[in-house]
Length: 327
Length: 116
Image (cartoon, rainbow over all chains, first blue to last red; front, side, top):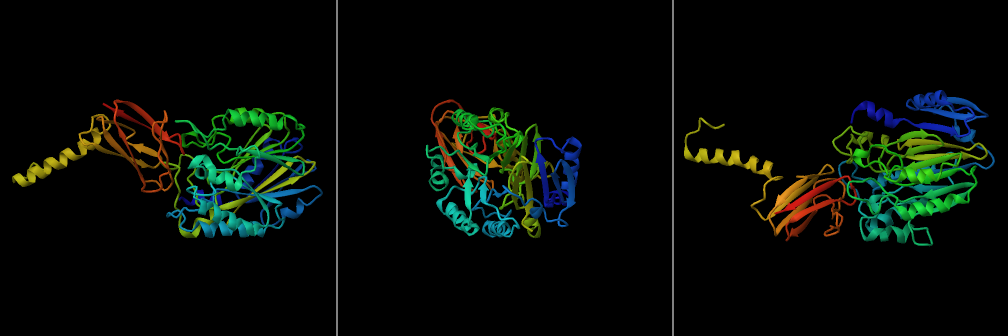
């Protein structure tokens, strides 16, 4: 891997976006993005955008306040993977767990955005489940394609299913935020991308119908719900329809995994974000012949793996998304 | 190549060397004489992507990737279990026709078996 790429992936970034547009105009956002690459923190408070060099400012304390919600995202633990790109995925998942446990603001719960296992094997699911117990937090899962290789995802459903109606997708509420776990890795069509399918779309439409427009929405799913790089299957065929049901909301945050690298995009009221893997990196879009596991020198591995920490400040309609590597 | 070699032994070797790559290159268009044909799954592609085989030929897929793949025919005729690295899956095509298939895990990966 080239040094410049690893430099980008090394960076820690926090972007706090406020969908009421009180301060984050396009210029402000671009400034944030520019800063992000060199490790900076952007906060919007009282309509004023401020940026800080990471490390010089304890952002977690800054966000303290009534009604704050903090949660963490981990993704793509690929338990069972043992190839050159990372012969010890247990050790790196352990490092991710330690990192979360060391966060200055303890997250109230964890989202796992899929590819828990590498081969959908019961022992792989069991290992992750066991390891995440030391977080002492509830963990909400959605499956990746590696979790539903056999028996229509029966092994995953048994352990991590939350929908009493038996579907894999579900939603829940925490401190006024509506969380929606979507599944876009099943019943895929030849030549296509990720897919939600008509049944899930119908459910989603009903699920959000009764919500107030001011309700902050967090959607989490494995494959990106935006078109990252369709040539490698990094997108979801029917995501536009899903997002159309979320248009009425002031603040929508979409958290994905699958591509084993961090990316952000803002489109209207929706902020998209992809997380690091805890197992192995994948190449930047189009930078390799294919999207397979990327081998980096052993001493660099933990700089391209990581976790995501998300903070919400009630009343500001703002979610602050912080990626940090395992180093 | 090998024009300067005069012994019959070396001449035979050179013929083998010249013919072998041509056979591989034509695999996509010419019916195979052998009844066992291999499709390699490498770097998220099927190679060859389209292959023509005689009836009753057995096609074997070999996964050379570090990630699992599932070989699935588009019309549901066949579907492998998840193939880990170096796992194989074989299917015998008895009737002539065109069989489209894809990877059920990475559906951008598509291929075709033409049975003559």
